[in-house]
Amino acid sequence: MNQGEREQFVANKVLEATAWCKTMGDFSETLGAMSYTLGSLVVEFPQDEREHLFIQMVEFMAKGLMATSKAVGEPCNLEMTKGFRTGADKH
Figure 1 (cartoon, rainbow, N blue to C red):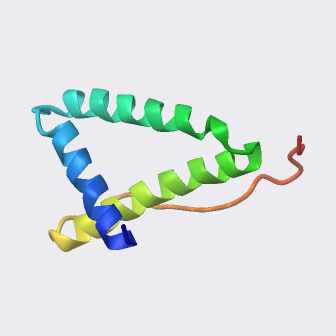
Figure 2: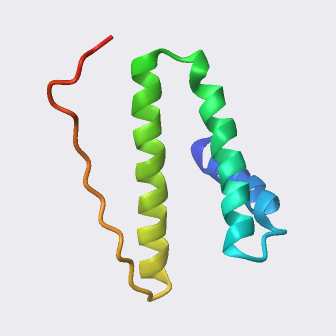
């Protein structure tokens, strides 16, 4: 499966999982369940990779919202700043 096919597969599964959502509350509950599941799956990977993956997931969601808002002609008040903690202890 190439990247385009994988992206389409994932998009279809997300649409299937959220098709029943009628309110923002429904969507929030479903997104929460999906996020919890994804968070629990990354425990198999090294700690430093897990932290990067979490940051990347938030970044991808923000970029998706910004791009889609622009595509449909709606404003997006989201601003994304990517940075690193300084002086953080490394374990």
